[in-house]
Image 1 (cartoon, rainbow, N blue to C red):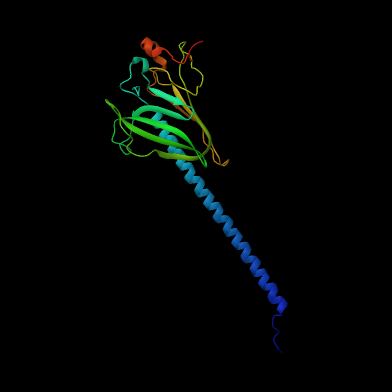
Image 2 (tube, rainbow, N blue to C red; image 1 turned 60 degrees about the horizontal axis):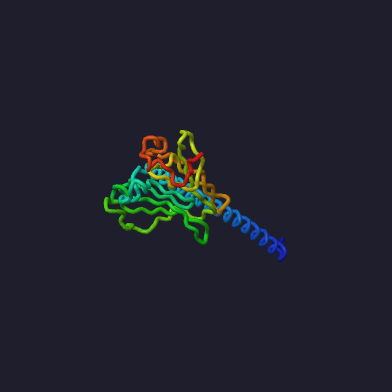
Length: 222
């Protein structure tokens, strides 16, 4: 009895089934690879965001009641400047980033092609003034769709004041600083950042000289 071989139709059908199985396996592998890559990217983004928020909390919380301009008189004794896109203050820098001592530190938001970027820069503060920056600004985060700083302190009546997008009070640090932001990628989230300042003088306005207690913008007027 002669053995019967495979017909051409059977061979074509077997090849088609094998090709379909390989395509399915390849698709599953591609999907798994994309999922793993996305998970790794999200984990890296989350770690970066945690590090950046930790830096913001540490540096802002330790802002010193020290004049931004050592040569400024009492009438212009600015300890802290804040605008929606920028915050400036004096604080200590860790030895891993600088030579130690007091530095004028700036966190600012800059618009770029892919959205806003959060930058950090610092310059050493000396009795003679502020020295030039030792290195270019550090880009902390990119891809922000919108972001803004705000601050608040106590009013003359001792009550907590509203959030304001500008802080230009003479001789005072704000009580709290807030950064609200969102990423262009809807899957990424920026938890609201609220930082209380340890050395704030907002609650001690009654102990400051009259020139330092006066609010040049009239923000504390009833």
